[in-house]
Image (cartoon, rainbow, N blue to C red; front, side, top):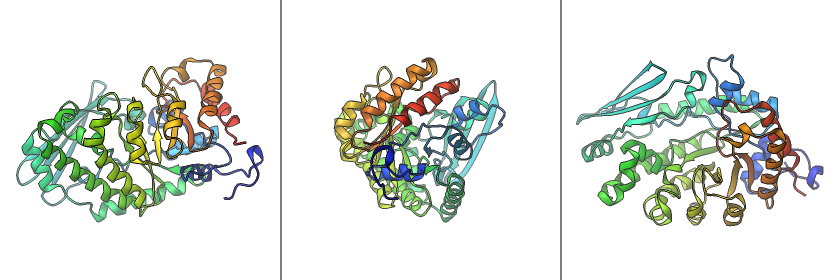
Length: 393
């Protein structure tokens, strides 16, 4: 849609048009206002529901409260080789619930050996689907496990391609003009491999055995690039990349550039080649990585989290990145949004919007997903103030 006029007199866009225009680096009628909603807040807001969904129920919430929706479903997050069995790759999953905890065990039987991963996390009712379980036993325990993984890792299969395409088509029907589909891919390369091998081990892996580290990162990056190419054939709009484990407080720019950046960039480039937008997620410290992020060239960096939980300042991020990367954030939803008064929330939302809006490439949001026990009046105050301040002059 072409924008006619200026400020409040511009032709009104639908949420979908507004978000797509912003992602394309152009000025929409106003800044999109798109809080991140997932199972925790949806189950809190709709306490009568036994299950909640990041598209179906998020669309209902976005329609009721009138905000621009970036639907970040997790259903495409699990890669094909952890979804089902393949030749020489027999997969079995088990799940148990006891004493308020969820425990999951994955076994992958290959001709050489069996790989085992275990996860655990809190049982949270309808919100459980949004809980990221802690890996208590990484899949790859030693060099032999890595060798087996690399030897037998199956290629992306046609059944998974069809499953993703049908899933995306269903979501597109549901979301309509309310927003864009931005499901998570199966994480950034470093994040994913850190889960495979154990996070503590993976920070030192390049120094312990650089060839093995690079072989694993290269193979996972290739699998992710193939995944992104397949996503290009679906009706989704964006692919989310989880990149917070290689953050500014843990890796630094030199480590990132040498051992992380080449692989993350391959995934980002594959997303863009597939005709989709990339959303790179680091909700922690990133100030030291701004130059790296410039070089990565993601479409969106979220969430520009500020102190005390991270080290970013929206004004600084805007100056460093805002002419080429869309920034998404950054109202604190952990402490401030749950405890402040509606008037305080409105004032902070206006301040954030005034900082992020100039020049475009900004999406107003929270610094991560909305949490339970967030007062509805505060959410309404945030949305109303942000939208009132969002119009371009």
